[in-house]
Length: 548
Image 1 (tube, rainbow, N blue to C red):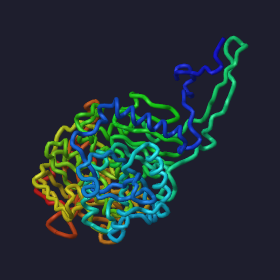
Image 2 (cartoon, rainbow, N blue to C red):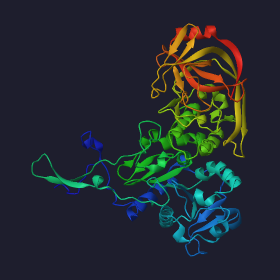
Image 3 (cartoon, rainbow, N blue to C red):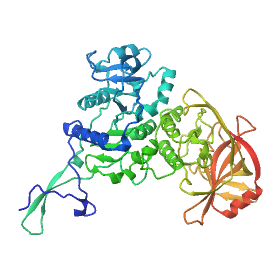
């Protein structure tokens, strides 16, 4: 007699296009979902050594008490050093999209006193209300929300608290991510889409007499699992398209995503979802585990790449995400930079790069559609942060054969107290082989924005320049339409796997419009022919240059 409730227990029983799954609740606000979150959380706290908190206690400057008996709504803003001095409290962070309109409960200089007395329930936006109700059901008391726990119109407070993001997220017991919500008014929860609901079928066995009920459904798309070590943007996950959120996700020890159709879990040990479950084997393909573990230091064991490579991968992912304000290019990654610096033995952070790895760091290039260079100065031209496009490092996994460039000085003047935040000015002084050439525009079709060659004497290098921005754009950054004198600066010789193919990376510079004695970067040059490279090196002269 075969039990009619028998189920398939392994993917090995199924054709390759099928996988064993789990039932998914109709809505994410049901007790079944919260019970699953409790189970994930307790399992992580009790069994995951990599996810344990650091010994030194930390409490943010402000927290929301969401179980307060001192106000009608039960929600009150605390100044922790005044209201709960010396307390080692367990708190949860919220990761969310602000959207186009700010909440009425935002903390300003004018609302700080009232928010400390208590925040009326009817001015708390729907997403925040849902989060508070979930955390109450999970028996948490303290919550950190950026828009309420930072005084938004006090630049000193904003700068100080933005610089503290490293600790705020990494020391939280849990980060709750409103992954499905495009703004604070949308709400936290989602319903299971009809296309992913289960349908019952009957399956006949080989004896020809017995049938079993089988439940099938379409697979739910996932953003937490990937064959690469990067977070992929997902239109169904608005939160994961935002630049600020990347460091929140990577710094947090534990993240529970209230996503479209289901709730998912990420920690430094593993990732899980309601529809498929999870396994320790997924830790190597989950970006939270791989890149997040890098920011949590040597206690974690799931990092395989060199720290230089992992930092570049974080920046590659970060630059593919959206920021409302270009001026936030450094602050929105400041927490991750601070965390990384703790494990780098005093290495210096220079405009988004690390001094000990500056040669590889300088060889970034753009990908995707080119844009005009931002009109206001936010970063030196040699930094990836100087442009609004996505960047990548073609040679980050290749063997470095030789560095042609020597860093003489790296000077960064901070704009405020955040050591990895905004800059007032920056430059580097380098010494290396330099050759002068002519930049040639190869096509009048403005859509072909990468069609440049560089003429060095009698030899023209075609298709080897990766512009940093639209070189033919109007405004102060516009180059001469047909010809413009540029400078090539050799940086690195890297070797492709197999040991036969070299790639020579260099920078293309032009005279600075701000200081005629200095230079500015306009692109990256790639030379794959050793003959071409040797020709250029023969023409090159060793010089010391200042690059702004």
